Length: 488
Image 1: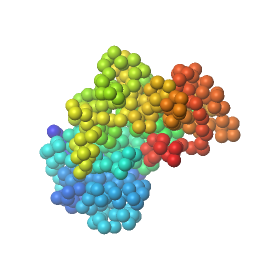
Image 2: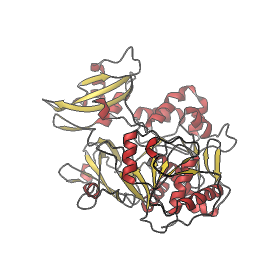
Image 3: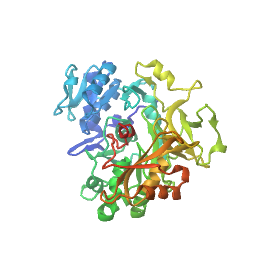
Image 4: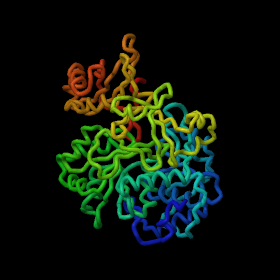
């Protein structure tokens, strides 16, 4: 396998990273990461206090150059979860910015401050493609978080497959404001542009104003603008809301080469609003911590709202019934639901020190069980309908995906946010419950009106049997709806 970051070896003056006032060229990044790599060489693992800063990027690159697996830590993690992660992964040190105040849960670890202006020799990257690169912890929705061991091979394979699908090159300038403790913001959003030899401009935190400034025309930046935007549905929803009142934002999005949404489904209504205002389509891709990226809508392929596209190069994907029956092309009808299972070089190596959990995650013939439910269209495009544990509703003999009902509800002008769950029902098995944040809290749409709206768009058996109104939906740091919290 080639080096993860061939552009670092050249040590050029091309821009590599920009975080606010901190701008690093490839030469400066190579020297700063090289200096830190010397300090951590030989460690079994290191933790990284993953703030949205240049220090985090330098720390992770240094660990990868040194061949030391990095464990990105969410700065907002609670004390109990942090204690579990540290105890489970046993890092030899924590890397952090000099100004970062670390919690008491990290007091027992040696601290190494990251200096983005340090200068050292470029470390030689490990040659073994199976060497562990990152240990990224799951969200812990089904128990204590598990450490997902990602190899250099998996990272390279996934990023290169995305480069094929998106025509991603060293000429691209990526803009995003994603957190850096997970796959989307760190692997795709930092390591992705560095592997291509391109540039990352991180917003620090997402804002509509930041996107308008950095993307497209580059107005006010003093240099060329960004070409690619990464975001999650919550961010694109805010952009869609701002577009009618912000001509600069319209120009910025219209000038982008690629708009990519991930980590959760982007509602069809937001797809349509952005395309209508800018002429640009948002493409979606599908991945998870254990698999990195599995599918994507190809760049330049035209609008496919609600679809996560086709399997990426090297990825095998199949849909499977509950009894293990594999759904063949005859079931590619856009209606028949199955669990996504995947194979490919993008998959993780193991759950850290969890051989039983690792074995249970795979079928006897080597396919990874994602737990995500989907349908396929006649042309092979994949549309995810939800998680097996929370989004597959069995009602009246039908298997129903929550996602399509949520999209239908969001199409109603009186609905700002929506989530759909199933609850036990003595007659139906499960009844469909809609959780709705109304556009006008003083005048919410009536439950019957919403049920009729869904029936007109989908089918009678998919209508909500109950509607519950909320001021806001519970979400995690990535904007995903926490459905278990709805029933707490």
